Image (cartoon, rainbow over all chains, first blue to last red; front, side, top):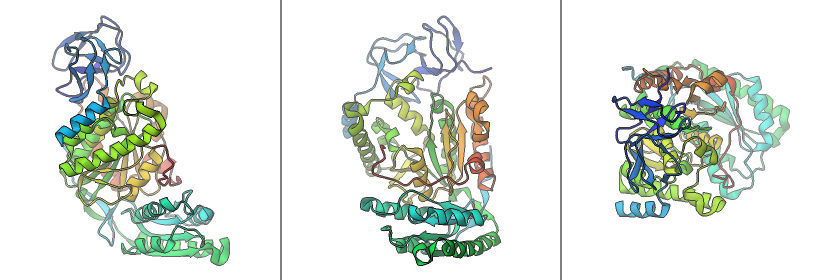
Length: 99
Length: 388
């Protein structure tokens, strides 16, 4: 039996769907939380495991992979329709602030 | 957890610890590759270092010579026969000098002095002597702190960043914790992760140098892709579930585990530091693994989701598969299947010990699948013309 979804890091608000989920499918996270898929979610795509506000950062590997372009509900498919990359210029500027 | 932190390796005159004991027959220019191949075919125990360069290309000359010297003085190499045409612009005397400086035996054959047949006969005779000398060496106990391991990914799929890359990340952390060295490269795959890199580097100085190297890679890509360079990932990546370039890059960086980045070196340059190091190099795997080998990596872990049989003549390549389906298709090319990490009851941490055991087995002499199926691939040298 394969895992249905994998949360890769403690801080993550998305998990990875291993072999595809149909809308309505209930899956268990390792820590006992049950999540119901709100969409059909393809193999190796992301599912929200927390509610994410518009503009809030999306975390995978405990790192920012982009921001929510609209509110995302737990169980929703997370991809290009609701997640976008941090602007590169903005990322570079942030870098200058750090160094 | 594995407590063994030694392997049986070959002690080199410059102090290095080899996991193989080859005699390298090194081509200084493409024109005489046939002589190199004939010597290698005639003398078991030798490996060919052949490539497509060696003349003209003045801006690449220094890089090519230092890369060839790096390959010929990798800890896995006992000694070398350098084969020159005679009139090529790659300065062969410099290559020979760099090899000799490490205390390794090295001999030069110049084909324009007496033609193919005599060059082959002389070269084969010298190579046979060197192989016999090499065979007299015995493996001695070496510490894992003497290992330098390259971390590469190629033909990645959406599961590479879930299973295979984190798996070698755990190995990388273990090697670093025990005083060894691991190397991340493929600068184009770090685009978009400046903030993370800044946090992970040992000092502001290292961080600045790494980010400059990533920016150079990005500028290079921008020439090809235009302004989308900083954000673009392939349609295949997106179909596979990747949404942003940061997400893709993070999956790649995972190969370096959670260790601090201690240093960044040029393509094929030997690091001064131990621990996790970055080599400034392209994303094209055959070139990338050449740089890793030239800088001294005794072995290279190469994760793949689609499958890739590529080997390297100097440094054994360990293929780490990301999924079961790949393993079913290409078992003879995959050394370890990380698809098992997706099993319901599997604890991710269990893979760490499997990776450590595999590392020690290969260090002790077990052949990798690539050594069996692709033992004599041509070496790809760095070219300014490569599209990153």
